[in-house]
Length: 199
Image (tube, rainbow, N blue to C red; front, side, top):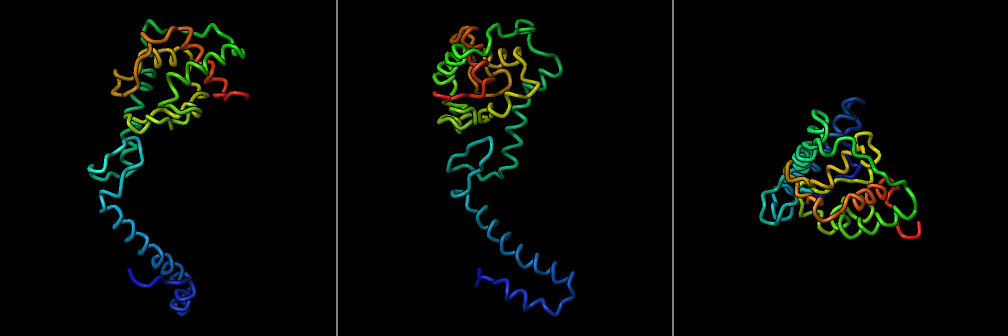
């Protein structure tokens, strides 16, 4: 790529150019090497993996992170679109947690979350669990989403109980492995902000 160009060398080169042209020329001189290095890196498929919603193995063709994120967003938004257009299925309509956010309920929710949810969604709901990158799309960032006005109780119960198969997501259904009480405990734990032991 040649010897690096220093700011002082560029300044000397463009000192005779009128000010506006000098700024444009300086920006171009900085941008061209950066674009060239990015292009070379993008051609190396083994070293380039998209960091987005789709994990790619070493043999996969490189994919730009923006495209991967768009696919993940499209998948993740299917449930939300269904909810906005028709609400939750009849069996989940008007579902509301009967459990207050007490220490006991939150602690029980933390135990269930740690056992059933953290491996994908991460200990603090950041979508960074040890299994997260094997899933399509990667798990939702619950810590950021839990305060969204769309995440009402009936939506959360439906999501946890039914999983994501209906929408092409790898999230498993928990209706046969968790009781309603356990799901509500997990909801309470999330609504409490994912407190860790001792918080």
